[in-house]
Length: 354
Image (tube, rainbow, N blue to C red):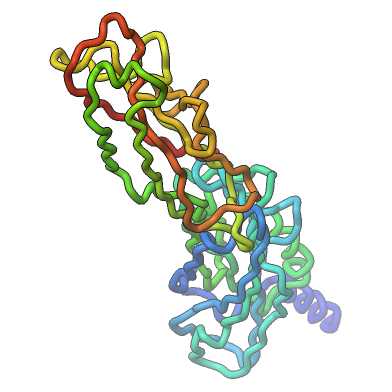
């Protein structure tokens, strides 16, 4: 009878867990910062980095042997993938810890340094087309990407249920704004801040503010021949953040716009001031096609029928510096009403990226 009672008591006590090191609540390491802006692009859609957890502080264990498990919140399992949509879903990036991390065993009673629990993490970041959690800006702070749980003294039932429990927690984390549902065994968490502000190809108009002065001509000179007062000039450009091989990572188009266009002809720039010459305007041409007047747009954002001064498609070659040869000349759009005076007009160069 005594043996049966002892056996029954033993089974009852073995059903209770006894964790030997937890008890101070979740402690957070300093966040790891990673800037993916110059690491991910259409040409290089995957980047993997090596990191190390930064757990700090101390904890105390009440047994001579303790065991700790690690949960990779950035899972490689597609059913619980972490996918972040930077700039309100413009760029979708998946993050996943790819290396297996074995449980950690520590020996010794009393105080231990949290640094004894630090582990390496290989994290793969990938540009993907799938959607996930939209991020309003270019930076997201994940409160935890991998945390430590005290596994010491777990009951058989807890050990069996632990993997399923962690799966439920990961799904909760993804659906709850990256807030992990910790329990009393969870000890240390590793935050991470991720930034993605891709450095796209851009071109700069190097001689912006350029003033082109045409020669002074009489009315009779302007009406004789074509392209009178022809004055050449050059538009200079430099381009940054080209892809390897000197290519553009997006479509680039350049055109001219103006609010000083002849109402009936968008190739003619005029001076609308009262003292300006009447019946005479200015036309522009590219030196590569001198017989085709440049058409300008009334809009600085929509080219419409405007002449493209320069265009390069995504993935095509783009020089770091280049120039566009241009020329301006007088154009008598109404010879019968011409009057003398000055002509002061302007146009704006627009660079459109897609």
